[in-house]
Length: 64
Image 1 (cartoon, rainbow, N blue to C red):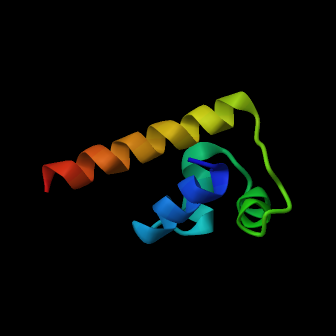
Image 2 (cartoon, rainbow, N blue to C red; image 1 turned 45 degrees about the vertical axis):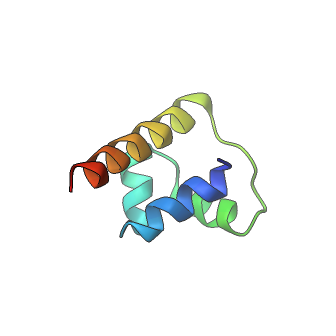
Image 3 (cartoon, one colour; image 1 turned 90 degrees about the horizontal axis):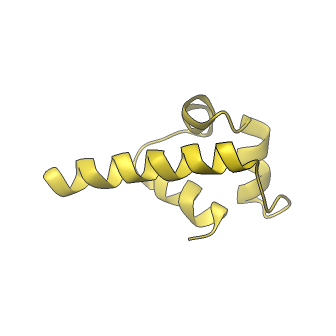
């Protein structure tokens, strides 16, 4: 999954850009730039936080 795909996945699960920012420490403006494809990368720690958030959401969805 690309960064954009990960953010779109979270958006489809009800997360706003601001909420993604709060949960991952990726700035809201970076989230916006990733969606516009003007930013392609983030720091490792922030990317890892994004992956963990997706994992958490995926596990919650599989329980339901």
